[in-house]
Length: 428
Image 1 (tube, rainbow, N blue to C red):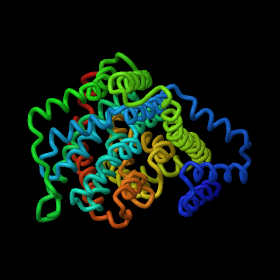
Image 2: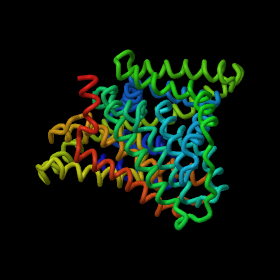
Image 3: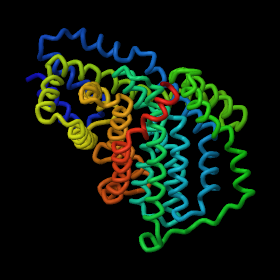
Image 4: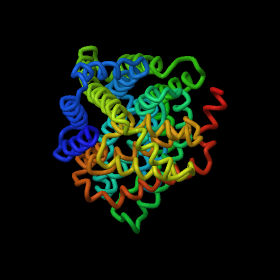
């Protein structure tokens, strides 16, 4: 009874527009008040959920992303991508995908990626004749790459909750993440043909000299993902230590090499990153209590028993997970899904015989699709604001780009080694 009340209140608060963190917190608090659970549990569980060394990587990578934006690293990455592939069909769209992929390998945050790249490219694409609905849908979909490829904040959270190696999850996500980026670029090539979008102004080839200059200017920014991923893969440092290194590197390059900001700008940068971090950590803390209360009401056992009685086939279970998470993503924030439902889905997947790394990466991709699907999808809301359209008008293009993500998911299910090869080879 209490669990049903909590779920109903959660969806009620979400429906009336209460922010996701407060929706979860208020529904949890209501359940605590009507049950015999001591109110002190609320504070204790919230503190325990946030008290994790692994989760320390989240504010570090958020801060690294902010330092990149203010330090000029992001602009150099976009200029590099534009010089390299801007002359292709749908050049600015291709640039957006490639820039988002490179930035994703540093920030780990979908919101930071979408805002940083989108604020530059979305207005430029609209001015060049791209359909605003296409532009908003594409940049929201490209922004979804950040929580998939390392150093993904989503994978850090998921790995710390279910006790799976974060480094292994990072390595497992590399191939699927890059395949998604490649598939998005192919989709851009098709969707920007003269027949479909005749108003696009195509860019000229920048020339070898321009590419060389852009590469030299972007080289310090391009080295950052290599340092982070290489260090984690080589066992030199953990994901949390990688976050610290990313912050120091972004600060030194942005301040002393690109001279993009001054020391007096640091309070603004720190406050901006702290705002994102507080939002993320509030969701994690409240969602952890939500999950604990659901477990106290035996909901995971009941749901798990029902699924097991429904099917003994692991791939039927996987199909149920795909449908469940996609639907859930339309009404719930990604990190909340990971915290509340991640442990249950992981436990069932292991029971069905799935590799924890394989299932974790598949689940992360499915969860992140929700970040761009209306009505809750925050990434689509950001890009629609930049492009001057409403999310409802983007359904057609979003359906295509979601299809791209699902195609890679199906490919990984058919060939699990796409995910498991790198972790097994490099970490054993």
